[in-house]
Image 1: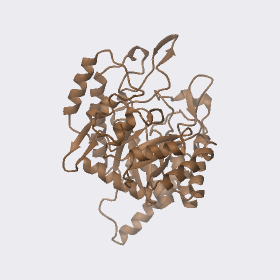
Image 2 (image 1 turned 180 degrees about the vertical axis):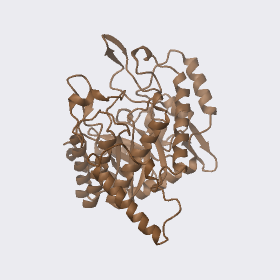
Image 3 (image 1 turned 45 degrees about the vertical axis):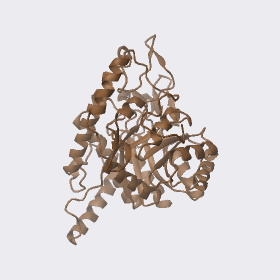
Image 4 (image 1 turned 30 degrees about the horizontal axis):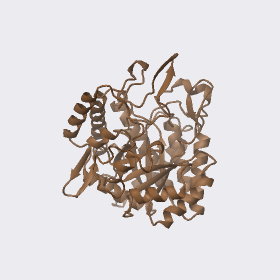
Length: 442
């Protein structure tokens, strides 16, 4: 399809991986028709603003922090849970801004991250084979709710709208104001989160000093919040695509930023064909199987005009594997003249399963990959200016290690994820502190 005229539907007829199978095609068509008439969740001006900020990050002037749930649950569309997700991103940004001396772009995996790619179509639960859980956009975690249900497409839209509405109200209402510490405090001891608390104390002292000199704006905030999700369910994404006549371009206005995953980035596949025509900034997951030549072809397809802020490459290798792959990819992008933003996803290459059958990740493995990738970028004259984490503001027990010393025996205490394990709030802040340390050494 490359080289032919693009439309929001030009992906149809191409191989489309990871798509659900519905029994009632008429019900799917009705749900999509209603989606096409509903208001957009974001506006084109916000999308363009994010693209400009990402261009600054690629140039070394900002840092992109992308994080949130593996797959959002409809049941988590509640005020307290949404606040905790925003809170942990803002707290991480304080550590990175203070330690790395750079502005942070907040990009949540939120308000739309309702679908997940899976390695198989079925799984065995309690002795019976059922369709695999693909996220609340498609089916339910309960084994009795595994049939793909088109009504969930509309529910996903409305849950995303409610989540985004609450996030906007929190930011506009001063939740992100550094002078409102009651909104930022979490119930930890100073021993658990000493790095964060000490840094926040230093930030507050600096702000008070500047205020005394008359130089503090009335509403000092940590910045805007943007939304992102994986562009996986193509009919759903197409229904959220809108023509912006004043821009002369098509935007997916279901989120500010979309990415294509490792399982759906086939060069001649439907997902790359769909996303190549959008004006949104886009991300591409890049795993250990990606060759420099394949990357050149993908870059040519997704960013032929070499637009700053257009494309973020999100590497995901696994601890100890980046050195065999990343240098060649860095050189390929440089040789082709693409001003990409390099991001590191140290989560997805480091999964493992306990003897008891729980998916988990080790904090040490995540940190090792992050350090390896940062060192390789520095060695090869490149910049790592973004990270991509699966995390939550809740005190879950899904990843081992970190300041809490969580081991496998403690995972069942508060394991809540329906898909992949997430860093909890303490582990997330510890990771942000370590990122700031790495940035100071760069």
